[in-house]
Image 1 (cartoon, one colour):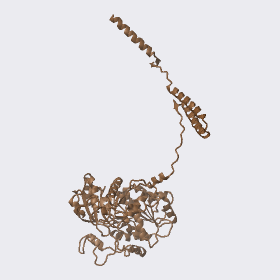
Image 2 (cartoon, rainbow, N blue to C red; image 1 turned 180 degrees about the vertical axis):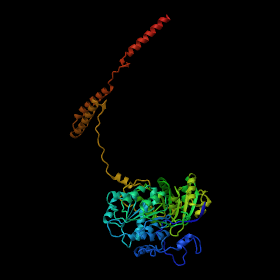
Image 3 (cartoon, rainbow, N blue to C red; image 1 turned 30 degrees about the vertical axis):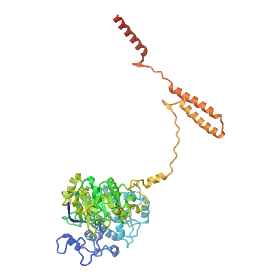
Image 4 (cartoon, rainbow, N blue to C red; image 1 turned 60 degrees about the vertical axis):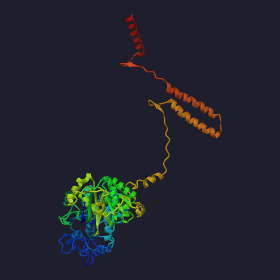
Length: 580
């Protein structure tokens, strides 16, 4: 079952300037329309009009970012005034610059200790926020440091010693650096909690509370989240001072109303790889993301697509940080066009020209579904989201469908050969599960992207299933020689004399043989042979030595053999007398 275009955006940082007479970027409504989205777009203002300093506005304009998105328009005036904010907006609405521009404008640059702290739930999101802040603060000379696990401590510690203005990091590494007294939060005046609901899902809430307790009470706190569960509300009541709630969309709007054409098909588990392979040959397909539920499924799907001739790579939590960053760089640079990932890439991944998003399996929740399909349909561009629902996941999908108010309550049963599957996704007729030979591996591939040595702290796992660098390095090392053990034969805890004699005599025999070879003495060989024969006879005698055993009854020795013999003879005599 398919539906018309539902609109979303992935994670745009801002809106480019519109020319005179140009229709709105989403193309949804014309003047006179009652669509509330049109009037919000019409009311958009530039960053300069919102009070952003010229240095930041010029840096954004150099990147083609001039007009603000609704969440930026609503949050920036409040944030620039130094007030606490609770911002709620769906994924991909530009929340980063909503707090980033105000953060950069309010801090003092050039000090040694960080003036602002941004806490993010994932490494990929921390990197994305760092990049956006570096772009916006380029003309201010802002020093932004991202700290997260998987990388070596030394470069991060060195940067902190030299001095930074803004620190962006994940809770675990931030706490580690604080406990080691390398990160001083005593001068932090602006605190930002980005994607707070995701941090709650990952169990980071206790770590966040420990971090907040180390920051001065006189600060500005901004909390941004796509959803507002009860735990996030209670967190805001405890640590925010008279916050202003900002919501970028009306309550009547669905969370999944993006600029993305959504398709939901009921598919068999064993037919899904074939369906994905044919989908990847659709007309107009660009960069594509395939989301899986498990790490093992990621590896399996990526290996299958690579074997079919597609340039694909996997990203999940079991890979080393250098391998994850390598795959993301290759995807951004166009060296691969298919990225198979778990939900580690569902937030914070900012890649242009992602045209298709595929849910290989049904997501866990409505929020996960919204964040996944939010990776496409950026800044007015069209996107396509395809969800493959197995029979066992129909109940879960119905809950997601009802939560988001989508028209896919009963997905149509679909196979890789179904005509409506080809028609809905624009797949050319006659497409098979493997692209033609001339179109296989057209891009440079993952191997063309250099694997950066980041001194990662975790173990490295190979994506191709072969030996990784650590294993190769272990093989190259010189192995220690096996040590010679001295063994002594014992019996009942006591050394056996024959075995000791054998051992001693055999040692003497060997030394005698060596001496005979060097001195060319012929008399030592018969002597050694004679000694060896005597030793062998002693051992054989020891083994054949019989043991005296007594049979007892009731703890007393009994004459078993004699008693048995007398009893048998007496019985025979009695029988003979009776017969006579």
